[in-house]
Length: 116
Figure 1 (cartoon, rainbow, N blue to C red):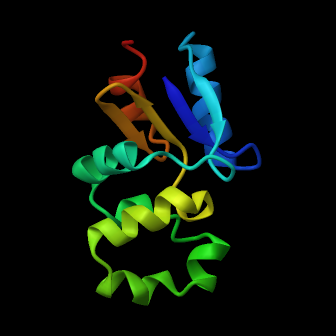
Figure 2 (cartoon, rainbow, N blue to C red):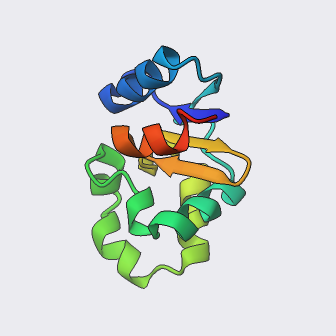
């Protein structure tokens, strides 16, 4: 499993603690240095929708006025932007093959990752 997170993110720390506590192996990747590839982003969009992939509480989201810009962007343009700017991406993103989760919801993690 690849785990795209940020070491100063409290939500990422909770997700890692959950995975560690259940012995789930993962490769930790700093999302700010290495954003998820387009394939992973597209998988996440298929499951959650485009808006869920944006870190709407982040500084970059506000500085770039993404709330308004998203209205006129195509999905391809949004994916291009997310794939090049990890600070815009909602975190953490955990991916293993065709399975992906965005953010940390303990119930979702129990259903998705505790079984692996």
